[in-house]
Length: 249
View 1: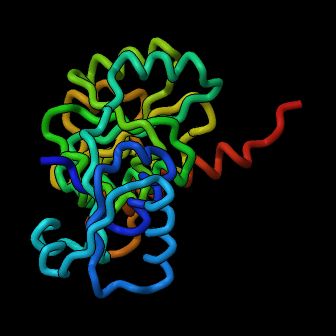
View 2: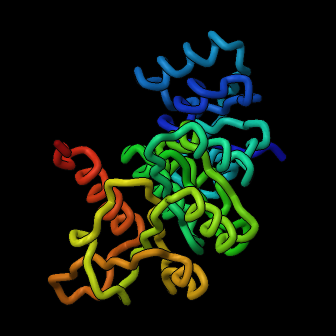
């Protein structure tokens, strides 16, 4: 069965970046608003098959997820490989990567990718095992960002981290075990930020391959933040530093 993508933002992004990957689109017969009409016009301009169906059929296809009345059937994603990362680094002056270690919730994966794209991350790196699939739920949570930012699945994350360090890329891991906070860290150079999974955080071996560990200061009684929220906080501290670093005379 073809992979599906649902949600207006996600399908708009797919249409802009990879229109030939869309095989057909199902649209609820009850949706007649301007947003859907505009999207239908775009789909028709690419000669994509459009089928009007009952909402129940969309609910079944999306397994009850919030599809916004539209589902696209697509070709299988062409995922980036480890060699693509090396080529990417070669063409970047100041690389900025996000490593997600053990993120098992597709919604969190998509939300992190969305934040990464907004923050100017050049690629998101994830291990092949113990990671959520890039499915329709993840793509909807990413709000189209998965069509713009490279997602690189790697077999051995520790090996990739060593390879990044050989390219003079500083690796910072976010963990509550750290003795310093993110505001005490220098994030202006060649950087990879590592965020851990929802329950156990960054795995031991991954932690051992980080150059530096940081935490997010917690002022209230809540012991931790949602993963995607924590990722956004760390990413945008890096963005702040990288955009507003003082000029060296």
